[in-house]
View: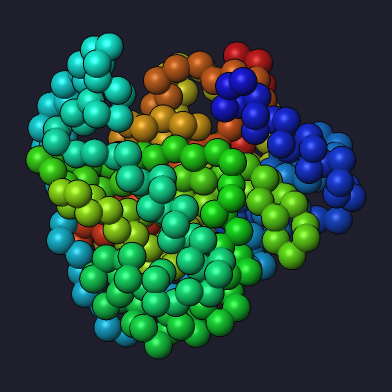
Length: 315
């Protein structure tokens, strides 16, 4: 079953368990968080309910002890990628050398282990799995306060999210900047909903660390017209432009768009004067629900990521 089919099935199952008409779409859109499609009966109402809950539980945190991370290799300067060799009968896929010397095999188990530690309120373990730069920016005291309730009850639920993929923002040599994306049905306090979360990570050699700072500065007022509920399902054909309008754009260096489970993102052409990033779709999208992962790389190299659902009409 394809990614889009799984997502559509999950939304339909959630729709059957949630009442329609309980969400005010305009209020959700004004807060700039994940928009769902209006006028699609129970399915759209279910998706909108997910948005509202995500907005209600959002955490905005900017540490007082900010330390900039080492810059990510600038876009367009990475070592050209080579096709991975096909494994021989004596060689399992997991033993195949990864592209550019970077192994992405530990990304999923690492992020799930981190989320499980958060869900289990294991502050020490969750803290130890984060980059020193993220630790310095958040601060241990603030992190422990968040672990008191907000993180275990919200973010921790994604440890069991059924769908996973990662987006490679930049890689060079044995280092890479990656965004892990978990999506599908998640259960919080006995309630199961469809939701998604993007988490920045860094790979240095064999070490994979979480680079999340729980800061939504660029996304709290970001407008993505192509996910607007008021427009209804639209056709998404190759060549169509996807746009993201950043009201908070100071410090933005690069913007990337990844659709569904694409590992390689579409580069966004960011206009610093207008705050608008545009990416050109490289294929037709099938009818149904999709997810867009939007990644901002700031001038210091730090990554910020957001996931939004949208619906496509038949191409």
